Image (spheres, rainbow, N blue to C red):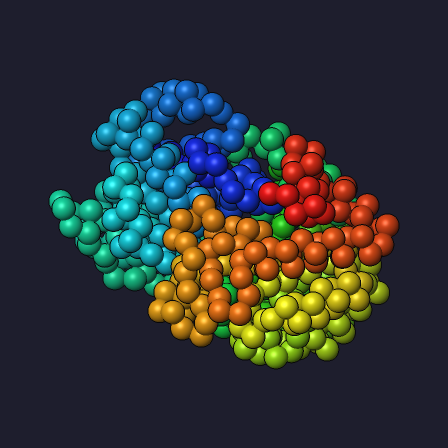
Length: 463
């Protein structure tokens, strides 16, 4: 049977431009899930975490394991590192089949394969069943959801149907990671083993800045099955914090309430803490109360703007009044809240961004992420910029510059990149210096190795 080696992330070769979005070293749920599905079907699989090995050690692991297939994931900002990783794999053994997965290849399959000859196959969308069929040696033309090389040509197959019941998937193979590397993660409520978990996939909303890699139709895990998984992680691994990676927890209120009630009924809310992504229009007092009682300590709210006209033009589908109401309830339930904001959205001006900064300061939230709009491939913003529509155009197609804390990838006709960068720094400065508590929270989560760089960028404007 073929052996499969999965990289948790690409090897870091390039000089990442974004000091805020440092090379991600946490466990990637998608890789763990693909590994679990392969193992359940009798295929030997290994997960490699390149952050914890030297390049020579990685070469040696590949030589000793002798995989037939190597899978590498990549976000847009990682695509050059992913190509470098595949090149290293081919250098060790050119017979190895290299597979690329993730949002970038899903959004730009042809361009990515044209620009990255190191890859043999691209997996588009969900990867569990697709990678299994590749590993079993199924004829590539009959494998749905891939793009592959056939001589000098690229061939793309029929899109793969979505996995309708996520409960049918194998449990993610977290045990294939060196979990000791992930046991000292800091989070609200303490520190300890931090694992990503998933109760649903898909996003039904139409925000112009977001690429829905999986699709718009939500699919779910059965609440009891999902909580069985959580209980298993507590018992087997000593889970202390679960990060729900669902695009929006609460899209299906009944499902979310069932999860919370199941956690509470088993007493798991006393054994681990969790965090989730949310929107103001999918939360109400009943659900927030259940979330809090079930052990959630941290909600990440997609707020985006403090101006209602900008929210409407961005197809966000929420209002500042809804946001203010939900944040007030979260504070009353002792939930920590991070507000996520974006500068440069349709209709944004220096004045509206000033309103957003003031709005953020006025909310009882603990952390903020002030991003500069990025034209990620697959988004409506990317399509507008590519066609030069609505005042947008592409400043750069060098994906190293597509970090959300950078700016520089997108040009618009009313605010320069430099203006957006200065407004972003002003926003961080005004928010975190608005109270001693916020400054303490900011300092407590700084990576010591990056602290000086971050402080210089935020408070002095030095790059």
